[in-house]
Length: 189
Image 1: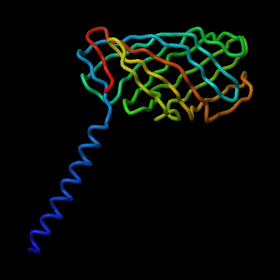
Image 2: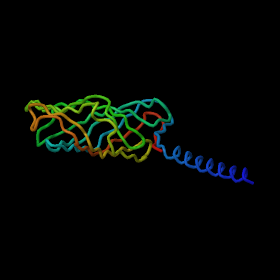
Image 3: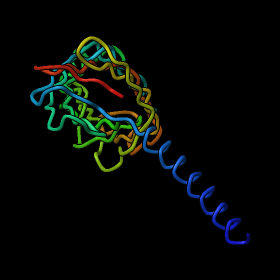
Image 4: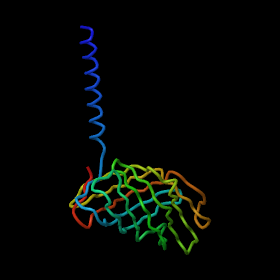
């Protein structure tokens, strides 16, 4: 009788563990595609807020490639366009490469800069300091995925032409990106 009770307790524990493990696996999000190939898209209005004020970008382009039919991350290159800061046009904005995590974060893959040449101001977004930023959410749309950025904790460095100068943490970024594969479809699940 004692062995039966022990066996019952072991089976109950095993079933509970199996149920928990099944839940953990089912909750992991992924990007799914029906074909490998290039990825393109557009940038919706973006707003970057920090100690130096607000920068706004009114558009841009997204590019990348789908290298796996199912992945927890998707790499993209974003070229922001039509950017302004206190009425000054940002004359140069280098592309930023991101790794989008399907579970809701983003990591920067390169160091990127905003420049206002007339002021001698350069704002640098260092790659190493901008990892696992949240929050990022996803919505499926026809053939592709819409990415909604609500980033906090963005780190940036202001050069001597900017005011104030130095390294700052806690910047924010909001806006949208739209991703669409050149062949087939892409979804977030």
